[in-house]
Length: 101
Image 1: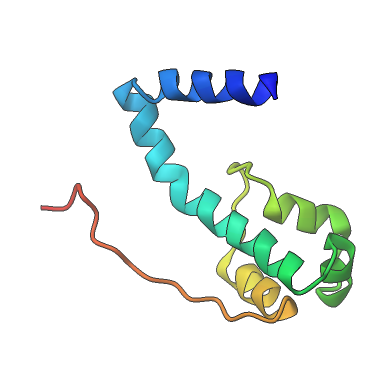
Image 2: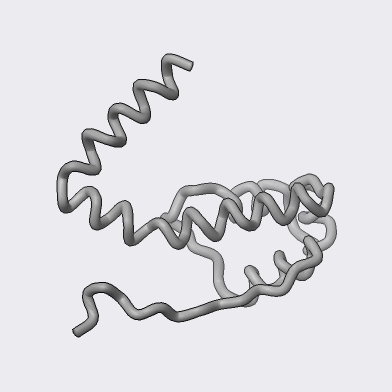
């Protein structure tokens, strides 16, 4: 638990920096979506290997898809197929940005 505590302290300190906080907030929708994807898969009692089989791909691709790494974001059709494979529909909403005038 020491690592978790030190990470939380690091995160709290880092988020005090306005640039870091803005970047973190910009990535939040991606992190939230990936958490939802993992929860949906687990609720469906499917492993990453199961989903890979359903999508005719490799487990490593599903692992990468669910990863919090944002360097390679999935395309919309991949998200739709993933959602179907785990028994869900993909829903997308636009929200007004706090930066919009």
